[in-house]
Amino acid sequence: MKIQTQTFRGYGKQRELTAQTAVECRFGGEVENVLSAHAHAVLTGADAGNGEVRYYGKAHFSIVYEDAEKHICRAEKGVEFAAAAKDGNIYPALAAKATVAVENVSVRREGASVFLTALLGTDISLYGEESFDYLSDGELVMKREAVKVLTCHLCGGAAEAEDEFETELLGDVLQHSETVCVTDVVCETGLVRAEGEINLGLLALKGSGGLVSFERLVPFRVEIPCDSASFGSDAEVRVCVADTSVHAEEEDGKCNIYVRFSLIADACVYEEVALDGVHDAFSTECGTELSYYEGTFCGVGEFKRITERVSGKAIVSGPLGFSDVLEAVTEERSEAELVTTADGQRVEGVANAVLLVKSSEGEYRSLEFSLPFSVAVDAGDAEAEVMVCGMSARQKQEGEIDAEATVKIVLREKKRGSVRIVGAVKEGEKFAENDCAISVYIPEAGDGLWELAKRLKKSPEDVSKSNPDIEFPVKEGQRVIIYRKKTI
Image (cartoon, rainbow, N blue to C red; front, side, top):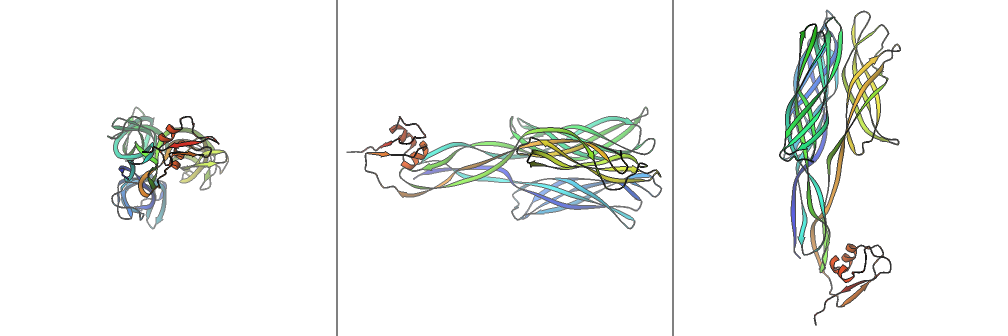
């Protein structure tokens, strides 16, 4: 019995890892009272080795503080870091793609120094070659059906985004923060285009004294060359801000703010490949033992975008009084996940921020406050990305904060599939020859043509030719006749 096989060679996501590492930065003794602490991290590389992924980058720290004379000041520092994510299934041939996010920043004082510690969370995707053999032809009766498998192509690019706007006169821009949200990805011939928004938060000194905070939503577009991209292809893109430049100029009693973002993007383009697969096979002359290739794949699909204004009582980290002035809200961030409840799907999470408060004695302090939220969505099998912006706080009752925030939710459909096709065939014993010229079979009600042909060890064409009046699946009481040609 002769058979032919082919080998499919593709590229796909092999594993996903998450890792955490802490990065620390020291500031000197001139820092008396820290009002706001911010950290931003950018990866410069990730390499797969034996049993681990090494990733490295730079963390940028900035603080707004009061010195001994109660002057509001700012300071910035950068720290390089390297860390490893362990997994015994990692080997050097894999390609590692990673993104990092600052999950938390803590401040502590030791003697005359102030230390900032940023907890970095890293998501790592590992890609590698995927191959398998499958039955393509041979001396068998085969049940064929086209199957689709996914292979992916990695690419990357860079871009810049700019913004210019006018504000009231400022004394100084003290601190900035950026949150990136990708809202759409489109593939064209040889190109992947990602669009989205950057939520820019600025903390500044007023020209007349005191603190002020404000935000800007800046649209961006990144175009990534990719030879494997074509119209209709699906792709996932991750975009991060590598660097931000903020410049302020005074003109005619106003302040013009100029912002430039340097963006880095990593993309994975999915290509759908059709195979002429064999789902079942048998021989009319001997027994066969089939082995199957079984695999699963996961891609991406359509975007859904939801914007919701949420409000309610906030959880505050410290006491407040009516004599306190709420001057600025900064360091907005969110923690959220897509959950399925008895009432349907919801995106549930918490919007967090730092509230800068000035007492009646003119002393500043910072308080953390959190606003829980729950938004009903119709997502199906999807992953959710959440960006919070426009967060505000008011003190209607003494000691309590009423907060509002805009929650921007992007849902990205997950496309999941599976493949099960014949990979190899082992020949068994030959069937005993049937000397009868005609055989009559009583099939079971509901038998289909393929199942009946396999049981009779005849091709579906031969069974249909011998029984032209039978419709499949067969009904109870029907007879199936098999003719065997005899040579006299």
